[in-house]
Image 1 (cartoon, rainbow over the protein chains, first blue to last red):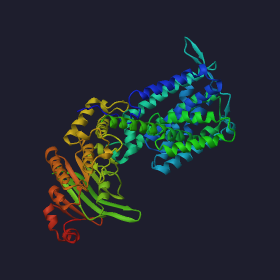
Image 2: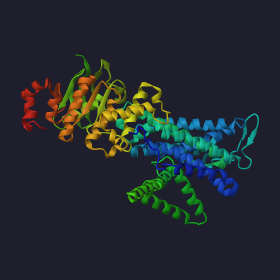
Image 3: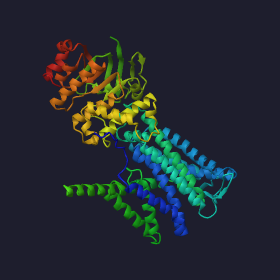
Image 4: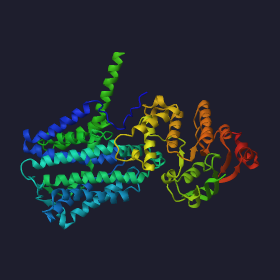
Length: 336
Length: 256
């Protein structure tokens, strides 16, 4: 009798396929500045921030089962808070301004969660988070210190001072590598939450909240935990992106920006940890390869998305896992 | 005998319909208290009020001498109340073993032990072993790696009972534990429940439709009709009560 636990949500990439794919993706991102043109490197930096954004969102969507439609508010809060602080106090260490962005996102998520989680069921929660997100969007657009509708421009890439040595993030591809390292750290934290004890509880809450309640768990508080963790990491992704794009406008708080991680989740598959990351990369690839088709780009991208979502209800990773399952079953069948 | 659970003057109404009217009920330690009543009598609502899923408009609930009227279900669970549902509620996408492990992790979290820390990546090995042993004693070991969704109706109810008992409750509330079961499964459940009471000193509060099961299980019987208690006491006496006979046994020939 085996007592080895089958760890929940361990994913469909059993064996070595998953780790190998992750290593390949990491190698591509890490070597990109060496062989790709500047435009593509810039895009890759944005995509890394969006991957973190989408993975953090999926912690409440795919894992906890809450459809939040205001995730962009946290992204914008982190980006604006850190960019604003860096402008007000240029001598502050960069990591402090980053942390400030994350902290503002955490507080915002806590407050929004406090209000929105009173109605955790489906459409109410979606509408409440949408409304609160739009409130943040409007507030940013009307705040002079945040540049109103024009946003903040000329956000500086700072110099990291480690005492013994300094790294000028404005030089070369240094800031790109900072995003890479920070993204890996943040993704690792999210991965841990998803696969660990907390993730098991959150997944259980998605499936059967009443049973979890009768296992002595304060369900609302755990949903709030998920919301705050997700909001904090999302804000950090925003704070990381601001000095990279060097310009931020209220559009990153708009509801259409909240739709982005939902799209990535549906595209890649929300039931698996890496699904939204796959979705973000595929989406960026689609957009990039159709960028010269003036007027046709949206049509092609939209059509491709439609096909994926209709043909693969579990997203790309879900479809791959199903194929793999079929392959294994067929081989087993042939062997007998 | 001491009163473990005591509810007084419970009134509960939905916006358009009155469900419970001045309900008094006490559950004594180590008894097996069965609530019966026709469909719509308010049994499940009474269950929800007693377990803390819903709050009454008036009335009080005391558990072990403590006023728990304002406490939510999860807080009452911390004090030793467990509960199963008419239709078993399980983590359908997870394996049977993972269901059992999750319940144990919840127990450890309540106790504040290192095994229950939220940042643990893998479940503690001793909890995995304990979960496996529990599955063994419930006859579910062979299904450990199957998804809970594919279990038979009877196995689902058994697994739900296992999850509930993993938290070491003193009082368990079972909402129709034998509903929809084959006669063999039904007998097994009755046996198990009687054993829990006799060997582990548990107190039971149940609702049940099957009269045979009711009289096999009950040490005390309460009859609910139109949201009011019309009789409560020794099962044999309640059965002889003319009013009960008329509105419950009489019309329905012994089966509801």
